[in-house]
Amino acid sequence: MNRRPLLFGTAVAAAAVLALSGCASDPGSSSDGGDTAPSGPDYGLVNAGTLTICSEVPYVPFEFEGGDNGTGYTGFDIDLTYAIAQKLDLKLSVQDVSFDGLQSGTTLIAGTCDMGASAMTITEERKANIDFSDPYYDSLQSLLTSVDSGIKSIGDLDGKNVGVQQGTTGESYATEHAKGATLVQYPGDAELWPALQAGQIDAILQDQPVNIEHEKADDGYKIVEEYDTEESYGFAFAKGDKVELREAVNKALQELRDSGDYDTIYDTYFAAK
Image (cartoon, rainbow, N blue to C red; front, side, top):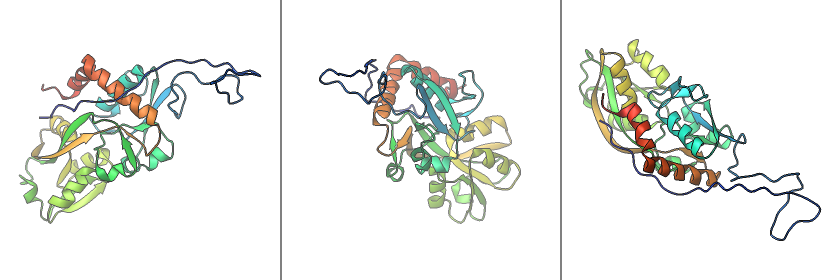
Protein backbone atom coordinates (compact mmCIF):
# COMPACT_ATOMS: atom_id res chain seq x y z
CA MET A 1 0.00 0.00 0.00
CA ASN A 2 2.99 2.26 0.48
CA ARG A 3 5.26 3.38 -2.32
CA ARG A 4 8.96 2.71 -2.00
CA PRO A 5 10.98 5.69 -0.71
CA LEU A 6 13.05 7.84 -3.01
CA LEU A 7 16.80 7.60 -3.49
CA PHE A 8 19.14 9.75 -1.54
CA GLY A 9 22.12 11.94 -2.37
CA THR A 10 25.22 13.96 -1.38
CA ALA A 11 28.25 13.55 0.77
CA VAL A 12 30.37 13.14 3.93
CA ALA A 13 33.93 12.15 4.73
CA ALA A 14 34.99 11.62 8.32
CA ALA A 15 38.70 12.44 8.57
CA ALA A 16 40.32 12.78 12.00
CA VAL A 17 42.73 15.66 12.57
CA LEU A 18 44.71 16.32 15.75
CA ALA A 19 46.16 19.82 16.04
CA LEU A 20 48.53 20.67 18.87
CA SER A 21 48.70 24.25 20.05
CA GLY A 22 51.91 26.01 21.10
CA CYS A 23 53.74 29.28 21.07
CA ALA A 24 54.43 28.92 17.38
CA SER A 25 52.29 27.36 14.68
CA ASP A 26 53.02 26.05 11.24
CA PRO A 27 51.89 28.10 8.23
CA GLY A 28 48.35 27.14 7.25
CA SER A 29 47.49 25.82 10.71
CA SER A 30 45.05 27.56 13.04
CA SER A 31 44.79 27.96 16.79
CA ASP A 32 42.01 29.27 19.00
CA GLY A 33 44.24 29.50 22.08
CA GLY A 34 42.98 26.22 23.53
CA ASP A 35 45.01 23.16 24.37
CA THR A 36 43.60 20.99 21.59
CA ALA A 37 41.62 21.66 18.43
CA PRO A 38 38.51 19.49 17.85
CA SER A 39 39.00 16.26 15.90
CA GLY A 40 36.83 15.02 13.03
CA PRO A 41 34.19 16.97 11.13
CA ASP A 42 32.74 19.91 13.03
CA TYR A 43 29.01 19.24 12.79
CA GLY A 44 28.14 21.87 15.40
CA LEU A 45 26.32 19.27 17.47
CA VAL A 46 24.20 20.22 20.48
CA ASN A 47 26.13 17.62 22.45
CA ALA A 48 29.56 16.56 21.20
CA GLY A 49 29.68 12.98 20.00
CA THR A 50 25.89 12.66 19.92
CA LEU A 51 23.33 13.14 17.16
CA THR A 52 20.35 14.67 18.97
CA ILE A 53 17.07 14.40 17.10
CA CYS A 54 13.68 15.91 17.89
CA SER A 55 10.53 13.92 17.27
CA GLU A 56 6.90 13.99 18.33
CA VAL A 57 6.16 10.68 20.06
CA PRO A 58 4.12 8.55 19.60
CA TYR A 59 3.49 8.43 15.87
CA VAL A 60 3.42 4.72 15.12
CA PRO A 61 5.11 3.21 13.12
CA PHE A 62 7.59 6.08 12.76
CA GLU A 63 8.34 6.80 16.41
CA PHE A 64 7.17 5.22 19.64
CA GLU A 65 8.54 4.08 23.00
CA GLY A 66 10.63 0.91 23.18
CA GLY A 67 13.56 -0.64 21.39
CA ASP A 68 17.05 -1.55 22.49
CA ASN A 69 19.15 1.23 20.95
CA GLY A 70 19.61 3.09 24.25
CA THR A 71 17.35 6.06 23.41
CA GLY A 72 14.13 4.68 24.87
CA TYR A 73 12.43 4.96 21.47
CA THR A 74 12.05 2.95 18.29
CA GLY A 75 10.17 3.08 14.98
CA PHE A 76 11.11 3.65 11.36
CA ASP A 77 12.45 7.19 11.85
CA ILE A 78 14.32 6.23 15.00
CA ASP A 79 15.88 3.09 13.57
CA LEU A 80 16.91 4.95 10.43
CA THR A 81 18.51 7.82 12.33
CA TYR A 82 20.24 5.32 14.63
CA ALA A 83 21.79 3.70 11.56
CA ILE A 84 22.81 7.16 10.29
CA ALA A 85 24.39 8.01 13.64
CA GLN A 86 26.39 4.79 13.52
CA LYS A 87 27.62 5.71 10.04
CA LEU A 88 28.84 9.04 11.45
CA ASP A 89 30.39 7.37 14.52
CA LEU A 90 27.96 9.20 16.79
CA LYS A 91 25.62 8.20 19.60
CA LEU A 92 21.89 8.91 19.20
CA SER A 93 19.65 10.89 21.55
CA VAL A 94 15.92 11.51 21.06
CA GLN A 95 13.98 14.51 22.39
CA ASP A 96 10.17 14.30 22.46
CA VAL A 97 8.79 17.67 21.29
CA SER A 98 5.60 19.09 19.82
CA PHE A 99 5.28 18.63 16.07
CA ASP A 100 3.95 22.14 15.53
CA GLY A 101 7.06 23.74 17.02
CA LEU A 102 9.23 21.37 15.03
CA GLN A 103 7.61 21.89 11.63
CA SER A 104 7.60 25.67 12.08
CA GLY A 105 11.36 25.65 12.67
CA THR A 106 11.05 27.17 16.15
CA THR A 107 12.40 24.12 17.99
CA LEU A 108 15.34 23.78 15.60
CA ILE A 109 16.30 27.46 15.85
CA ALA A 110 16.21 27.19 19.65
CA GLY A 111 18.98 24.58 19.47
CA THR A 112 17.00 21.85 21.20
CA CYS A 113 18.33 19.28 18.75
CA ASP A 114 20.54 18.85 15.72
CA MET A 115 17.75 17.76 13.38
CA GLY A 116 14.09 16.85 13.28
CA ALA A 117 13.05 13.27 12.48
CA SER A 118 9.29 13.14 12.80
CA ALA A 119 7.60 11.93 9.59
CA MET A 120 7.72 15.50 8.31
CA THR A 121 6.59 16.16 4.76
CA ILE A 122 8.82 18.39 2.66
CA THR A 123 6.76 21.40 1.55
CA GLU A 124 7.60 24.74 -0.04
CA GLU A 125 6.04 26.54 2.91
CA ARG A 126 8.26 24.71 5.41
CA LYS A 127 11.34 25.29 3.27
CA ALA A 128 11.03 28.98 4.10
CA ASN A 129 12.05 28.15 7.69
CA ILE A 130 13.69 24.72 7.43
CA ASP A 131 16.42 23.02 5.42
CA PHE A 132 15.58 19.42 4.53
CA SER A 133 17.65 16.34 3.87
CA ASP A 134 17.07 14.32 0.75
CA PRO A 135 13.66 12.58 0.84
CA TYR A 136 13.65 9.29 2.71
CA TYR A 137 10.01 8.14 2.57
CA ASP A 138 6.91 8.61 0.38
CA SER A 139 3.49 8.74 2.02
CA LEU A 140 -0.24 9.10 1.39
CA GLN A 141 -3.02 10.72 3.40
CA SER A 142 -6.04 8.66 4.48
CA LEU A 143 -9.43 8.84 6.18
CA LEU A 144 -10.04 6.58 9.19
CA THR A 145 -13.46 6.09 10.75
CA SER A 146 -15.52 3.49 12.62
CA VAL A 147 -17.00 0.66 10.55
CA ASP A 148 -20.54 1.74 11.45
CA SER A 149 -20.10 5.50 10.92
CA GLY A 150 -21.72 5.51 7.49
CA ILE A 151 -18.76 7.52 6.16
CA LYS A 152 -17.47 6.08 2.90
CA SER A 153 -15.51 8.99 1.47
CA ILE A 154 -14.42 12.57 2.09
CA GLY A 155 -17.69 13.64 0.48
CA ASP A 156 -19.60 12.23 3.46
CA LEU A 157 -17.94 14.53 6.01
CA ASP A 158 -20.42 17.40 5.72
CA GLY A 159 -21.61 18.14 9.26
CA LYS A 160 -19.09 15.74 10.80
CA ASN A 161 -16.26 16.40 13.24
CA VAL A 162 -12.94 15.44 11.68
CA GLY A 163 -9.79 15.16 13.74
CA VAL A 164 -6.52 16.49 12.34
CA GLN A 165 -3.06 17.08 13.74
CA GLN A 166 -2.22 20.75 13.98
CA GLY A 167 0.34 22.03 11.51
CA THR A 168 0.34 18.91 9.30
CA THR A 169 -0.31 18.28 5.63
CA GLY A 170 -3.31 16.21 6.74
CA GLU A 171 -4.84 19.35 8.20
CA SER A 172 -4.11 21.25 4.98
CA TYR A 173 -5.71 18.54 2.86
CA ALA A 174 -8.80 18.41 5.08
CA THR A 175 -9.12 22.20 5.03
CA GLU A 176 -9.18 22.17 1.25
CA HIS A 177 -11.25 19.05 0.57
CA ALA A 178 -13.45 18.17 3.57
CA LYS A 179 -16.28 20.50 2.64
CA GLY A 180 -18.81 21.20 5.39
CA ALA A 181 -16.80 19.36 8.03
CA THR A 182 -15.77 20.81 11.36
CA LEU A 183 -12.02 20.31 11.77
CA VAL A 184 -10.91 19.59 15.31
CA GLN A 185 -7.19 20.17 15.91
CA TYR A 186 -5.14 17.95 18.20
CA PRO A 187 -1.44 18.14 19.14
CA GLY A 188 -0.74 14.66 17.81
CA ASP A 189 -1.90 11.11 17.19
CA ALA A 190 -1.70 10.35 20.91
CA GLU A 191 -4.75 12.60 21.30
CA LEU A 192 -6.44 11.93 17.94
CA TRP A 193 -6.85 8.18 18.29
CA PRO A 194 -8.43 8.19 21.79
CA ALA A 195 -10.75 11.00 20.64
CA LEU A 196 -12.03 8.85 17.77
CA GLN A 197 -12.47 5.84 20.05
CA ALA A 198 -14.40 7.97 22.54
CA GLY A 199 -16.73 9.28 19.84
CA GLN A 200 -15.54 12.87 20.23
CA ILE A 201 -14.77 12.99 16.51
CA ASP A 202 -16.23 11.06 13.58
CA ALA A 203 -13.04 10.46 11.59
CA ILE A 204 -9.30 11.12 11.43
CA LEU A 205 -7.57 12.47 8.35
CA GLN A 206 -3.80 11.94 8.60
CA ASP A 207 -0.82 10.03 7.22
CA GLN A 208 -1.77 6.61 5.88
CA PRO A 209 0.85 4.49 7.74
CA VAL A 210 -0.36 5.77 11.12
CA ASN A 211 -4.01 5.07 10.30
CA ILE A 212 -3.03 1.60 9.10
CA GLU A 213 -1.65 0.87 12.58
CA HIS A 214 -4.99 1.84 14.15
CA GLU A 215 -6.87 -0.29 11.62
CA LYS A 216 -4.68 -3.25 12.57
CA ALA A 217 -5.12 -2.62 16.29
CA ASP A 218 -8.94 -2.44 16.29
CA ASP A 219 -11.17 -4.02 13.65
CA GLY A 220 -13.93 -1.64 14.66
CA TYR A 221 -12.18 1.01 12.55
CA LYS A 222 -11.19 1.11 8.90
CA ILE A 223 -9.56 3.33 6.31
CA VAL A 224 -12.30 4.25 3.85
CA GLU A 225 -10.27 6.40 1.47
CA GLU A 226 -6.66 7.18 0.57
CA TYR A 227 -5.28 10.34 -1.06
CA ASP A 228 -2.16 10.46 -3.19
CA THR A 229 -0.76 13.83 -2.20
CA GLU A 230 2.72 13.08 -3.59
CA GLU A 231 4.31 13.66 -0.20
CA SER A 232 7.90 12.84 0.72
CA TYR A 233 9.37 12.99 4.22
CA GLY A 234 12.70 14.61 4.99
CA PHE A 235 14.86 15.20 8.04
CA ALA A 236 14.70 18.85 9.13
CA PHE A 237 17.48 21.28 10.02
CA ALA A 238 17.48 24.89 11.19
CA LYS A 239 17.52 27.20 8.17
CA GLY A 240 21.08 27.92 7.04
CA ASP A 241 22.61 25.94 9.90
CA LYS A 242 24.47 22.62 10.19
CA VAL A 243 25.17 22.39 6.47
CA GLU A 244 28.00 19.92 7.01
CA LEU A 245 25.77 17.69 9.13
CA ARG A 246 23.00 17.75 6.53
CA GLU A 247 25.45 16.70 3.83
CA ALA A 248 26.75 13.93 6.10
CA VAL A 249 23.21 12.67 6.72
CA ASN A 250 22.48 12.63 2.99
CA LYS A 251 25.64 10.63 2.32
CA ALA A 252 24.81 8.16 5.08
CA LEU A 253 21.29 7.73 3.67
CA GLN A 254 22.73 6.90 0.27
CA GLU A 255 25.18 4.42 1.77
CA LEU A 256 22.36 2.69 3.68
CA ARG A 257 20.36 2.50 0.48
CA ASP A 258 23.27 1.08 -1.49
CA SER A 259 24.09 -1.54 1.14
CA GLY A 260 20.51 -2.77 1.47
CA ASP A 261 20.35 -1.79 5.14
CA TYR A 262 17.70 0.81 4.36
CA ASP A 263 15.45 -1.88 2.85
CA THR A 264 15.89 -4.04 5.94
CA ILE A 265 14.71 -1.20 8.19
CA TYR A 266 11.89 -0.33 5.81
CA ASP A 267 10.61 -3.91 5.62
CA THR A 268 10.55 -4.15 9.42
CA TYR A 269 7.73 -1.61 9.48
CA PHE A 270 6.10 -1.58 6.05
CA ALA A 271 6.51 -4.98 4.37
CA ALA A 272 3.19 -6.72 3.62
CA LYS A 273 2.32 -9.21 6.36
